[in-house]
Length: 142
Image 1 (spheres, rainbow, N blue to C red):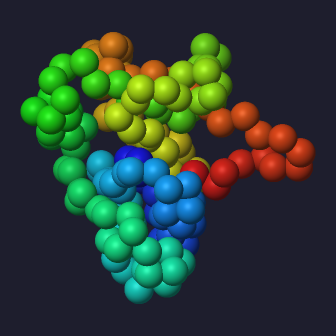
Image 2 (cartoon, rainbow, N blue to C red):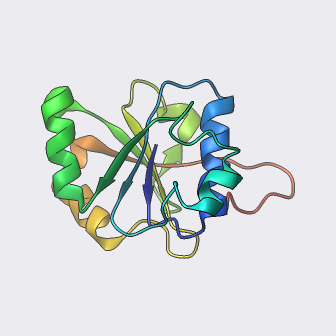
């Protein structure tokens, strides 16, 4: 999971708990601005799972630095899902297989402009998706 600008450590802690409960082999990383998962509130809201059952790769300053890391580890054919609410995005259940990551944007603004630019440049690496929600749920809060 790649967080992009998530501001509230409580929200990030909830994401960490979800990753742990899902039993996914994954690493939490952050690109750009955002809160620290190791802050007291981040650790508390993750129930102490951050860095323990959900390893943290670290924080990248920008998307180009992160893409270089991915290119070195996976070659140039990696694929990452990006959660967006735009026309043309697909259900995560339709496109969520054989991917190396999932980007979730900030609470109020979604993904940052830097990622939007990189998505235009490297279209083959980024897939726009959304998480279908049922019932009264309006938002995942990130």
